[in-house]
Length: 114
Length: 227
Image (cartoon, rainbow over all chains, first blue to last red; front, top):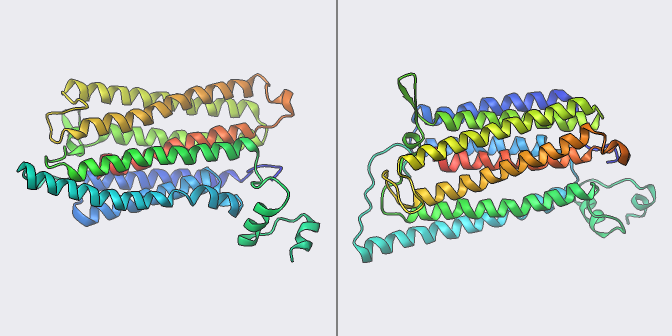
């Protein structure tokens, strides 16, 4: 890897254009007021597509050796465990607030609300 | 077993290559040390931002008050019509544009085209600065409307603290990135790296940081503004 990450310019232009298009789509998810599961699915899909292209192409991870890929992309998997734990914790805290403080979960039918 | 590989000096691919990289008497990662360290720093930063976003997730789940609707809170009235999230959309496009100019700067750096590298890095920094400017405008607007870390007129009190902490920490990263970019850009221009053997890998290291800042924004945009 003495010559470093040297790639044709074409691939950068393509990914650049693609990021614009995908960002436009994710903005449209909000603009066109998609709701419910469809909204969350679209948000996550567009997010992972964008993140994937930035890491793989712009940050050159695609061309790095597997040892570096695993060392950097492996540990963040632990965050999934934290997300899983904290979602249970959050639901539990909400329940106790309703149960012991008499708070009501006023869930109005507003766009974007979870 | 891997004697042939050792003797030929060819790096084995796949998982065998991983075992080789970690067990052979050499540097584990076949990249410049600055790049390896930047990656490790970014990994630690990933955990910081993840903790912020997971914290935001838990307060949003546990709040019994309705969460303010980002689409409405961040709407701007332009030419007499209210457009949802318009400023955030513009900020997103600015950051993507800056990511593109940065990727080109890295490429020009490896081609040792100092003038183009310099100007592309300056363009990236200018876009980053305009992003921070818009963020300052957004903060001002929300503060004027009464959003505070401990409460706001739109709904759940935790909205303010999540907003200021997450976007503030990201904005700080962008500001630091602008300074970092300018320092390296001027060093590229004045021949600092030419006197050190003409090695422009540092541009790629700056690029990694800048793309990471864009990457974090992708997640903030999805989870904080769109969700």
